[in-house]
Image (cartoon, rainbow, N blue to C red):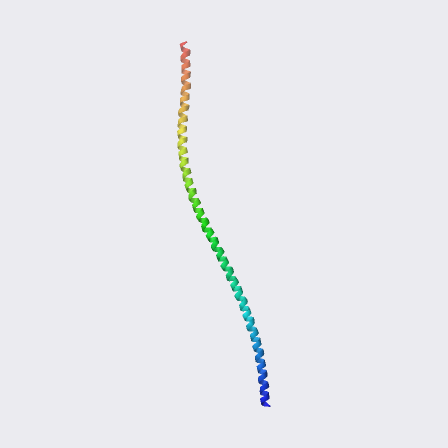
Length: 127
């Protein structure tokens, strides 16, 4: 009988080991599933990060293009400001010439009025 007891005992131990093995296999499968879930989450996060980086590169490229356009516009503005200063100087010179001409004409007209008055006086004195 001791051999039969030993066989029964070994059979029980084998069954217990099978149960432990099943439990460990269940834990292992759960860990694998968790790992797969974690992997999917990490992969998804990585894809989102890549998309964000792609969008950021596109925005940076647009920003560089905008900066280049702004520099070109600033250069055009500076050129137009310079042209405006030149035009203003020419206008000031013309205004100055016109003011001198106006003073001469007004002075001439006043002199003409004075001369006409003098002629009238002389004509009246001769009569």
